Length: 453
Image 1 (cartoon, rainbow, N blue to C red):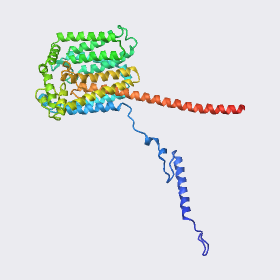
Image 2 (cartoon, rainbow, N blue to C red; image 1 turned 180 degrees about the vertical axis):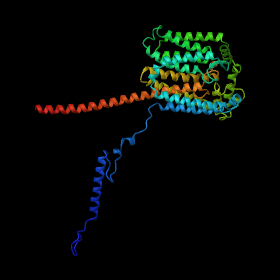
Image 3 (cartoon, helix red, strand yellow; image 1 turned 90 degrees about the vertical axis):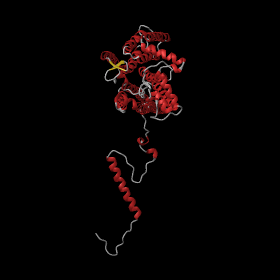
């Protein structure tokens, strides 16, 4: 147990003792790691950057068209700012609450976000299967509007307290229905009996119910959407020309027998001859743009919105944008809609199938057409129409319908990216399989040839 006095004591090297202890610890550590089914580096061992797990170097990729979402987000935020600025005095005058319109817009925005997220995750092919019942439901709502007869601003367009407007839903549903219908009959569009006449019947039912309300701007939008989608689906030019002729003829009849339509055309013609003789609405809008100049008077400082500009939070909100942000701000807003059009057609070009391409193209054209008409009216480029400015104008029906359209477009984009990823994985797998087979076949051939020798 103890060494006897005078017995020689062996002196061990301190460094070797430490090395042996470290080795024992490493072996113990490796045994524990192996029992857990994982590989861990030894104590003091460093991991080379190339050997780090791939997850650490994996970049974050969004599985949809991010630029489109950023464009829409910018439009929505800017729209909230302008709705608050344009509606403060107007809301106080009509509702005795300066924040009434803005708060309602926020509520509709939350509802629209829920609808957009739902449609983003719901496969658009499922929507295609629901196109017929949704169209029937929309027609029923348009008929209900006529029975309820809730008059607001001289027209019967809403169902509940001026908030729910089925004609806005009809535009969205028309694009969905025509995408399915035109895709199913793309080989028969050259036959007038299977293409143009049924298309005219579909548009005529919706347009007829809407023109009775009356909502002339919605009718014009529906006619334009029908013709554009028929063209995008591959319709013949002679049929498109015939459809355009019929649309112009119907528009002429409406203008001749409808007092509102005839007055708008008369004001438009007078405004082309002399801008000071245009409609009161256009005159005040032009005044707002003149006051704004290049850089505007500042957010919240416009004067025309409180001195008689008609409905500044809705139809005339672009005039408020022009006065408060100037030519620079108005041009920037136009550029955003141009970018929206670009991204929409880019997504349509990469869509997984023709139905998705038609759906995205139709929804994109609808949103940008509404914006074009709203902005052009206020500078007297086209006759006056009541189209809302998507994502900017106050109004729940248009905002929810517009966000639903964005949800569908992003859904097509998401499925397109997923399809491309699956094709890429399949291609990689085929390449790897070929390499593996090549190595097997080459080595096998060499062995067989050597065996014959």
